[in-house]
Length: 418
Image 1 (spheres, rainbow, N blue to C red):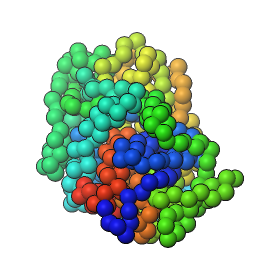
Image 2 (image 1 turned 90 degrees about the horizontal axis):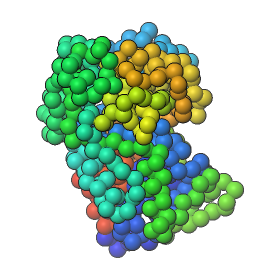
Image 3 (image 1 turned 180 degrees about the vertical axis):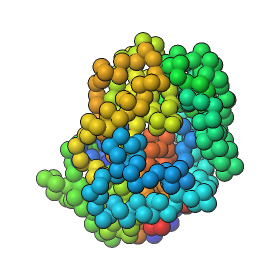
C-alpha cells in the first residue's frame, strides 16, 4: 500500500443495498471499521423486489442490438416491455441517444468482454459470504428454463449465447422441446413449444438475502444507520467529511458511494460525469399450484419468474423515467397480460407485493466501480439488471483495491471517470 494513501481504518459506505453492503462486508474481512448510511433503509431500493437471479452466464450489457428493433411507437406504449414517457426530460433524452449509439454489435461485444472477468468472480463471492456467516441461501437452480412459443423464437437467445461464449464467458445450456420443457417444469403452459435450459445459475430471495447480509455486517461490528441521508461529501487532507441531514458532520478515512440510481448527486463533484439513469422494473407475487425448481423465464415477453417460498415472484419491464415516480398500474397489467398465456397453475389475479424499483443503468452498459478524482472517494454502482449477480464480486474486488492500493485488473473497464 502506498504510504501517501495508507490503508483506511474507518470507511463510510453510502447505500444499504446489495452492492453497498457487500463492499462493507468485504472491507470488514480486511479489518476495516465500517459504517453504512442509507436515506431509507436496508434493501429499500432496487435490491428488494427484483427477480433475485444470480446469472453470471447471461450477465450482458444492457445496450444491445435488439434495442434498435424497437420503434418510437413501441417504446411510448404503456404495454411495451421497454417504455419511455412521451414527456421525457432532456437528460433522459441524452441518455437514450448515447444508449442507442452503444446498441451495436461491435460495442456490445466490447462491453461483453469487459464483463467476463468480473462475471467469473460472481459465484465464488457468494460462497465467501456464505462461509463467512451470511445466513440466507443462494440456491442452485435445479431447473432454469427459458420458454418460447416456437422453436424459431429460440434462435435469438441461442445466437446471444454464441456471442457470449465467443467473448470468453462460460455458459452452459441445453435445447428442449415443448414436451421436455413441461416435463421439467409444469409451470409452463401448453403454449410453450420449445425451450432452453441454462446451467450453473442460482437464485435467491433478494430482500431476505440483503437483510441477512446487513445482519452479518452488524454482527461483525459494523454500524448501519437507516434514515441517514448524506447530502454532501467534502474531501479533506486526511480523510472525508460527510454532511448528514439532521445529523451534522462525520469524518472517515474513505467513503464509498453505492447509492444506485441516486449516485449522480454525490459522485459528480468528484469527476464522475456518466449519468446513472433509472431503468425501473416492476414485480409482484402470486400463489402457485406447483413450486418451480428454479427460475421460469419468458424472454420473448421479457418476464422473469422466481419461486419464493409458496409464491412466485413475477417481474418485468424496463421503464426509463424518474426513480421516485409512483408505481404505474398499467405496467403491472402489461406484465400480467404478457405472461398469462404461457403459465399454468399460477393465479395472476391474486397479486401481492406490487412493487417498482429503479435499476441504476449506464449508457454503455458497464458499472462504475473504483476511485474518483479523489483517492478518498470511491463509487460502486450502475450495474443495471446485474446488481444482485455482481454486487458481492464488486464488493470483494473494490475492498481489496482500497486496502492494498492495487486496483484490480477486473475493474479497469469500469473506471468511474471514463
